[in-house]
Structures are given as C-alpha cells and as structure tokens.
Length: 136
Image (cartoon, rainbow, N blue to C red; front, side, top):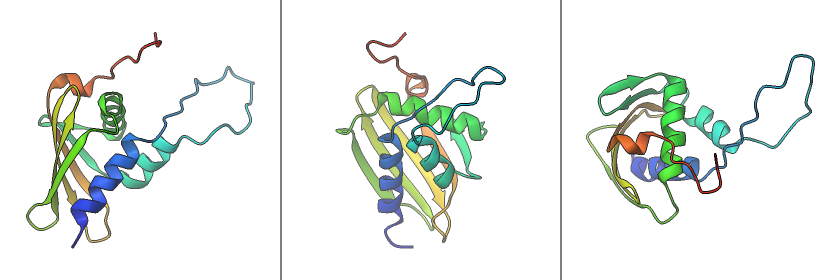
C-alpha cells in the first residue's frame, strides 16, 4: 500500500487545521435553521468511523477519540513538523513536533484507506484542551 504514510499525514493535518464549530443544544421548542458546516466533525466522522483509539496505552471510545483530537488541535499550529514513515505491513508511524511537546502517532490503515487503529503517545498535557487567549 504505497503512500499510506503520506495519506495519513495529510488526513491528520487537514483534521487538525479544520475549524470546529459547536453550538449548545437549544432550549426545547426552539428550532434553529441550518448553521455553518462543522468541518472538523465532518472530517473526523469520515476518517475515524469505527476507529479504535489509544492514548498512552488506554483505550478511548469514539467520543473520547474526538475529544483527544480536539485537545491536540489546541496545541497544533501549521508550523508543527511531521515525520512519517511506513511501518510494517499497513502501519504508519508519525512523529509530530508540537510547540508543547513531541507526539508519536501510530496508525493501522486497511487497503481501503480506512483507519482501523490509532495510538497516541506523548505528554498528558497534550491531551487536555489548551485555553486560547480571550477564551473563558
């Protein structure tokens, strides 16, 4: 499966650079019209459906995996350096130099380029959403 590591790196970069738009649930009886597209959630659902997630050796469910990726997004910037390589068979290993510390990502990808398993290893602080200036 050639170029799997390139595909995975681009998929992860696109996700981390995608805007996440979250609206609180409206009160009962209030119906809101269509809002802006949440590109982060769309890409997450397309690429990580059915994916098993692991963070520093602990398994996370689908919502937990999304929370981890949203936390990583708050530590990511476009200057973060990726080093990806093809591992054994269908495994990709990426190392990402984030401003707040290094992150190792290992993914198992099947022939249809679906991510079956993704493992994150790094400082615990990377898996907690960093407050942005001006946010409370």
